[in-house]
Image 1: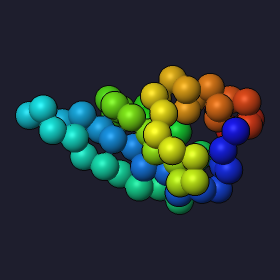
Image 2: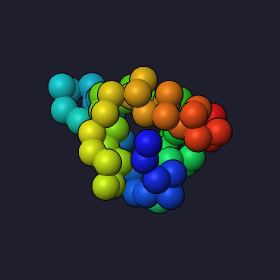
Image 3: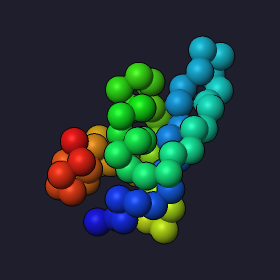
Length: 65
């Protein structure tokens, strides 16, 4: 389980086979932003990278979503 107040980076697929990284102050904000984007990967500070489905599952376990 990760710290829900840790900094979270989401990697978003762009149109031209590149990705953009957006950084959020906590998991709740990152989770909310994920619904607006096609997310390739999530990186939680102090925990490491994970696939989007894994991040969403952890957020649900923490009661964030």
